[in-house]
Image (cartoon, rainbow, N blue to C red; front, side, top):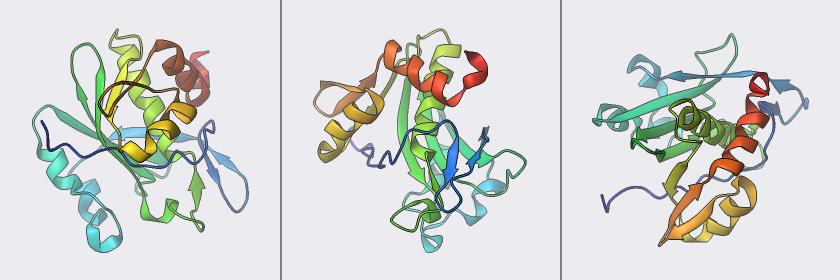
Length: 175
C-alpha cells in the first residue's frame, strides 16, 4: 500500500511507563484495544492529526490506546497495528495533543506504544520484530532511540535484541 502514512512521532524519552513532566511522577500504564466509543473525543477539532475512526474500520488493523492505570477514559496516545504473520507492522502512532510540544503533560508515550508492539510480536512468537515506514527526517532518530534499522527505502525494523530491551523497560514484570 503506497499511501500509508509515514511514522513521524517524536520519541521524547524512553521511560518505564509515562512520566509527568511537572511532578516527575512515573505512572503505570495500560494498553487496551480501542472501541468506537473511545474515539468520540479523538477528532481533528480536538487536536488529533489522524482519522482514528477510519483506522479502526480497516480490515486486519487493530487500534490500541495507552492510558494510565485506573484511568482508562483519558487516552495518552494511540497506535494502529497489523499482524503480518511474521511481525507486527505499525501503521500509525500518535501522542495525545496534550503530550506534544514544550508544555506536554507526559513523556514516554510513543516509546511505551512501540514497546507494546514489540511485546505483541514477541507474544505471537515473532521474536519482537516490528516494522514501520518512517519519515525520512526521523530515520536516524528512530535508530538512536528505538534501535530500529533501515532495511530498505524508508522501512524501519526493530529486531529482537532491541525489541527485548524495550519490552523489559516498559514491561518490567516480564523480567
